[in-house]
Amino acid sequence: MQSRTDLALERAAGFPSQDGVFMRHRGDAFRITEIEIDSDAHGAPIGKPKGRYLTLEAMQLHHAAPQLRKQATELADELRSFIPEGAVLIAGLGNSDITPDALGPMTAGRILATRHLRQELSDNDPDTDFLRAMRPVSVLANGVLGQTGIETAELIAALKGRVNPACIIAVDALACSDLHRLGTTIQISDAGISPGSGVRNSRAELSVQTLNVPVIAIGVPTVVDLHTVIRQAGAVPPHDLPNLMVTPRDIDRLIHHAARLLALGINLALHPQLSYEDAEAL
View (cartoon, rainbow, N blue to C red):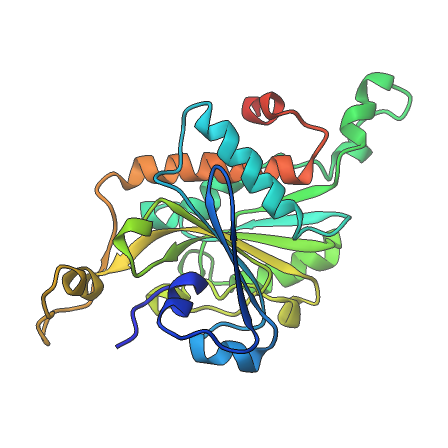
């Protein structure tokens, strides 16, 4: 039985090397694995569409310097390679009332929104030139279908027509199948995302095919299913045992640290003119 996971690295681990799926390794602050799938047909055996998938792994997502600085800087460098020139819309996916699912909204709350600056700041004030020169960034953290009655994809599609982004960055909590990757792994992909797919609660897809602009998905695993935990302990889950989702005991701390790191990386990637100290002070 295939474990529930959003991570391309875990999906690929169960399959031998094959044509059309390329894997490379690098990294400093993180151990980075890049998987590139050149077609949907080649990605079908591992359940992933065509695209680039970066997995950034560390012992932990740090909250203290200098490790935080190194991780945020490396994350920004990797993320920047996915982002085209132009305006960007950040979508923080998830439910802020459920801690394991709050990564997207919490990250969105730390993103520097700049789209309004050019309209609000005076063209004649040289002190505002730095701010007006920043990339236009809009931020959305709308909640989930059960809270709003509206699909996230519908909201983003409607908003896209107003802000005209060159790309959308969707931040979401993920599911994994390896306990060691909970709170220690970041995945970046240009293949879009189906929110909730790792917990079998998939909503409408967010991708270039559905929104007509590139969708960059970034997330951190915060849950693993109970049957996987039992199998990793060397036992067989009873047939009548519900397959619940399990999250770490210190999930509050994990989400806080992960959201801070993701926001630092995103802000630095979008605004290269910011120093690390500037981004951390936001």
